[in-house]
Amino acid sequence: MVAPGNPYATNEGWSIAGRDCYEIRRLTSSHDCLHRGAGAHTPKVLVRVGNPEWNPATTKWANEQVGVSQECAERVRGLITMIPEWWSNCQVRMRWRVLEQGSARERESTVCIRFTQVENEGPYANRKVVTKEVEANLLVLVNLIREQCFQQVENFVPGDIRYQGFEDLEGRGKGMITINRRKVSLFEVDVAIGCLLGFHLGNGIQAIVVVPTSGAPSGAKWEQRR
Image 1 (cartoon, rainbow, N blue to C red):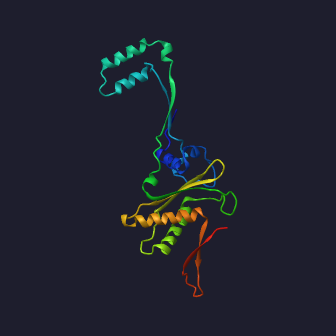
Image 2 (cartoon, rainbow, N blue to C red):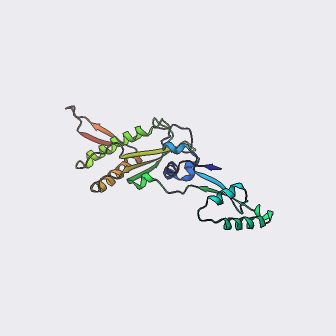
Image 3 (tube, rainbow, N blue to C red):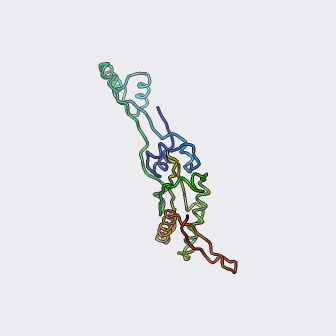
């Protein structure tokens, strides 16, 4: 059996919370923010390892091999026909799966944040999650952090912040946020912003814009979410 699948999407999914968690995830949920190729099966091939049978398929394969002489092919065929039947039946079933190579997004990022949902109740629990909306909200948040802490550097733009995630078997969200690499001169600042983002997300912090009596926003403060 052959299941070609999508190796890129599979590796991205595995990298969020591990292979086992990804393989038994909820296939239909409100939190389905994976690469579009994740709907395919995990790439794998089931094979049997042992002495081959000489048949038309084997003959065709031998004729297609460059550098294999007819004499060599006939010799192999002769050896195969001499093998006892009981020996030929000794075959081992094996399964080939795609190599686990980690996330390409993570390798290309400055910061990678992984998280697990810990609460199943509240207004934000189990709501519909759309990748573009999550990335747009994260973009607003990191630019707000940048504005408050690192005004000398340029804003993040769409595509700089990527998100992917899913629900595990128990219905808890698993996600991964990556901040793409920008200029070398921005590396240290981007790492600091990523650390602040992880801190705010992990501690349930939300930004509150302060509007003075003049009516013009003067900045933001942070308070603990209830």
